[in-house]
Length: 185
Image 1 (cartoon, rainbow, N blue to C red):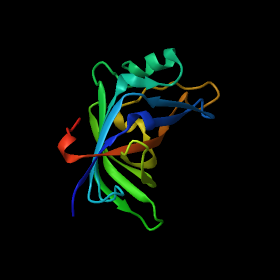
Image 2 (tube, rainbow, N blue to C red; image 1 turned 60 degrees about the vertical axis):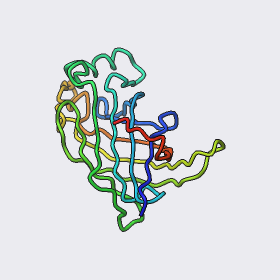
Image 3 (tube, helix red, strand yellow; image 1 turned 180 degrees about the vertical axis):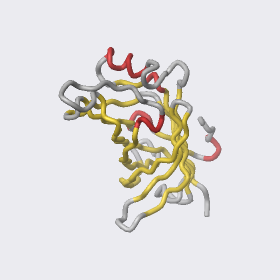
Image 4 (cartoon, one colour; image 1 turned 60 degrees about the horizontal axis):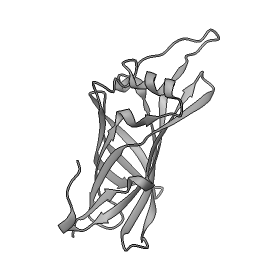
């Protein structure tokens, strides 16, 4: 079977997250700068290998003061750890018809396994003749597993920042022609 190569269409993709604030609301954010590629054995991204790299300093929560705190040494320490990466180890279909993408997330110099639920949205040709494929990923992680430990206690009990980070990711890939393919990762 022929290998198909894909590059991310970052203009039509989003790497988002949500974290509890004060135990009762969510704060959302996303990363604006990232690259990804995939190699698959078919046109449906099944049994694929995925690689991803994001720029930590591209974090945006809509609040410059909060972003500066998150990028500092209390959280991401973006100056020392400017990138985070993800490399898949398996992409398989589960019994419910959805897919599970397993891989290694490296963040702040710490590499740990993570599993994400993936829903294949389909593939089609765009008006310019490019073959596109898209899917959504959801999952969660404990931020402390990657050294994002800062917090403060609330007078009413609980903590200011939740430990669980919910990941909400929408990806659109473009199939690349072999002769024009140059890996970005």
